[in-house]
Length: 137
Image (cartoon, rainbow, N blue to C red; front, side, top):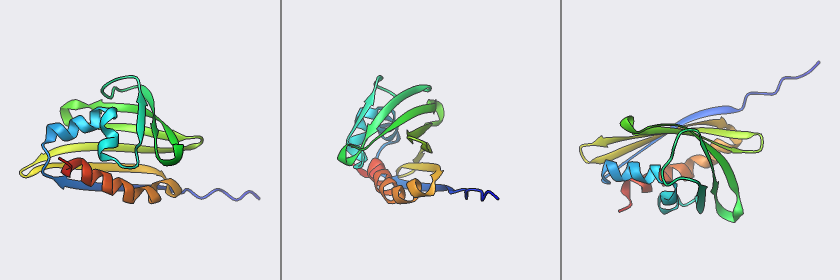
C-alpha cells in the first residue's frame, strides 16, 4: 500500500501601510534594481529589463549566495498589482502584490502560496520588507 504525501501547501496574506506616496511604492516594486533598497533579504537581482514585464524571467539573490529563479506572471499597472513565481529546484512559491492609496499614504498587500517549509520561515522577512517598502523615505 502506498501512503500519499501530505499536502504541505499553505497560503498567507500580509499587509503594511505607511506614509510613502503610492507612485513611489509602485515604482519600488516595478524596478527590480530597487528591491534591495527596501527588502533586506534581497542582495541583488538579475533581470533583463528596467521594469517588470509579464512573461519574463530573472534571478533574485539573497544572503550567502542563495538565489531563486523567478518568472513574472502578470503585471496590472492600472490596478498596481503584479504576480510572480519564485522557484528553486522542485520548490515554487507564488506571490501576488498589490498597492493601494490611503488617506495617509499607501497600503501594500502580499498573498503568498507555497510549501509550508518555505513560506512559514519567509513570513517575518516579508512582513519586515513590506513595512520598509511603505515607510522608508
